Length: 134
Length: 134
Image 1 (tube, each protein chain N blue to C red):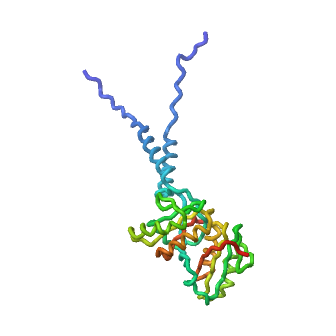
Image 2: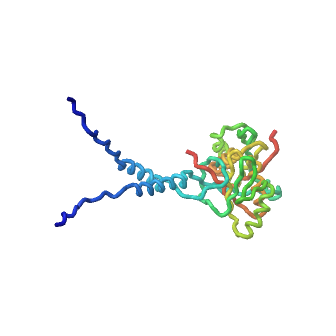
Image 3: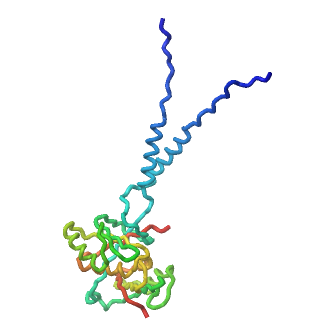
């Protein structure tokens, strides 16, 4: 009397799944960032010179307008800066590294100089700005 | 007489399964490899560096743009005035942990001026955010 029921399994449509997965993909593509940042802690410079102790051994790093470095007045390459500072410090724990930036100098060499001084083992790093050196 | 087929067989649909495989793969990649973090409103090219003091604070972030202007949240100010604007903010929030994101091309003088001013309002140490160099 009745036909035998048809046992045909229907395939579930994949389209909504793909829609959702695409949406998630685009969200994570746009929202995620791959930039790895880090930070270097530095002491803020004293604005008035009275706070600066003058009886200590001072190593001066100059940052010139063109971004080059000078160590106590002598030109030095960025790669050799840390070694140069270490040699000038001579293992003196009290010694001060003073970083002087000229007017046109940018932030990148300043950061490089701070890191070089840190890598050289300086305990005390100061920064100041000068109009022009020599 | 030559006989033609009445209807040529329909071209079968392209399977979507390989597509879904690839999309899932990309989804999992972005899920695992990316980190979700709020994006910066201000576009700064961070300077590169190696030193990591692992003291990234997200409390107060100051941005120094390439032209030397300082951003705190949505306020723009010059580097001379920023610390005094910040004093009120710091007193309210009670934080003295300040991060600075400075553009690598920003004038070093502005950054030093800003740090001097921060010393004036009682911030003794700042975190300069850098990008990891390879």
